[in-house]
Image 1 (cartoon, rainbow over the protein chains, first blue to last red):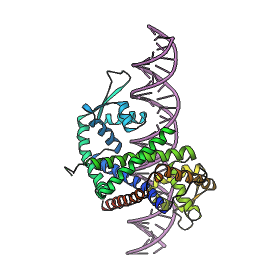
Image 2: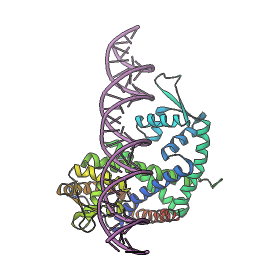
Image 3: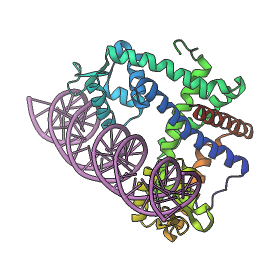
Image 4: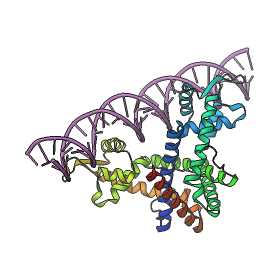
Length: 156
Length: 156
DNA sequence: ACGGAGTGGTTCACGGATCAACCACTGGTA
DNA sequence: TACCAGTGGTTGATCCGTGAACCACTCCGT
């Protein structure tokens, strides 16, 4: 790794553009959800996963796996969401170590509103800006990158 | 915004893929820089901008504008970088309110090594995974999204 | 059945980001 | 020239994310 091939003009534009877009887009999404719905993007993801699960409940570690969050992060975040009345936690019957997390009715209402907002934002900032062909290529690109990241991760 | 058009199969894949890729990619970049070079991605960006500036020095607020950082964030981050010996700060001659930030020799060495790592990572995870055509489309897509975000931002 | 490795969660200490309040200085206006 | 609105930057309170240490429980091998 002493002298890697530098990025040419086009590669440079693609890479810097991607980095800048990432920053801007996540800031936008988070800001919209916060101001319009009172949920952080993190809150949103938790509620989204829970409300998609059967009975609106998941084991803590399953939620963590799906979100790819540190377990300490999940634990602390759930504590805050619990104190806001968005979720509840109880010990698992099946495994006395574990906890089961459930969306509350309030949580369901919030996520329903937030999901509408989220879809509108996704369209507004990205989906509706692109042609069919660009959308297809975007899928190809993100698939390739994620596969590559997974491979690099597995290798290390 | 009571009933927005939902995302179809393809749009869904593109949007979720994009979100997931963003998370994975920034985690990867940050992790690589940290473990291989001892710099966070934030440190990297500060040093990159400084070392590209003439004389390796910039007014604080200019640096802030380029990074699009809160001024308090910049101030605190620079304090930490200063105490690590990566940058120095002095009052501006021209404007006694202001500060001028300068990369140190140690900072230059680190950023030189980190830039190599960064380029290698960019290639490894993204650039080298894509065809010429995909790279071109990626530029188009990111340009469109950033323009849209800028427009939305200006409108609000 | 029991001892120990492994799993599921929580807690703590710390680094980093945000927001509001604040101070120092500038530059235009009366 | 004396004011004061605006600009450049720092500080402090608070929130969020991470990693390590820790506790409770499970499950496997003997």
